[in-house]
Image 1 (tube, rainbow, N blue to C red):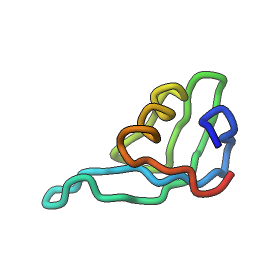
Image 2: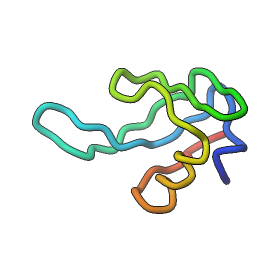
Image 3: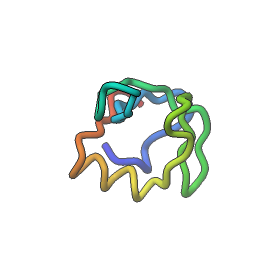
Image 4: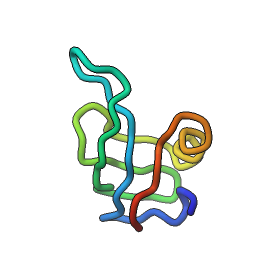
Length: 67
């Protein structure tokens, strides 16, 4: 699966930083999608490019849980 397959309602696991915990995995729902960007239902990360998301999946532990 790649970022191009993601659509509204897909579930992904991203890494977020809280005040005392860093790089914590958290599952979030994709709120909105365009050809180039993904928006997340999460305060720490609002928008990310699809190409950037693919890079983060390959190198930084992001995961696509469900499409």
